[in-house]
Image (cartoon, rainbow, N blue to C red):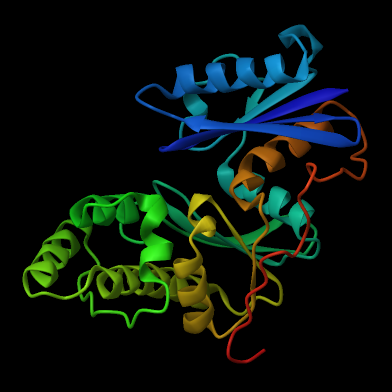
Length: 279
């Protein structure tokens, strides 16, 4: 039994293939065409696994580009897929914080991977990976460098929540001689403040898992912990939660009872627990 989950995001495309008790993944830039990115990710995944499309029982697509994937069996919202994937990665997750390239969302679950409520920011780039990307460009660095550059710095005040105005504010701070490390720390706090406000609208989670590409940014994670005052769990596969959830849902559509799966070699659960001030 082989099933595939494709998460075509605005910045990166993730693909996960489930095969019996193991899974494998690929990640690649989405580029200008979500459809081509989805097809290329699928073909690369199949090639690496030594399979053909005919070997795949069900393909589920998710992410903002899911509607462009004409070759999938079904499209499922990323909210549903992230909830399912987060529950597998961190058993008992009852709140998922997902910050992707285009939007951010906070999802409440029943502790078994089923969505009970959610809030979403999809009208503005503030509090998303795109916001961080724009700020990194303004600062003359790569988005992957942000966490390292800001480590241990006192955050500068970034008062604007609008990406356009915040970019102007960053340029003004640079002109005033404020260090890049402090500006980046302020940007991280700005993102965390917005997302924490979303989480507080839903209530308090007992086991919070951080998913999406921004989960790799240690600075944003630390700021979220401070803002919420709660422990937040990340794992090395957090950015794959949507694609993994889609593949798990595909397994259910194929009529197979989900079996315990193995994490990829070298990975492990609960490697990134950060504790809040109340824990």
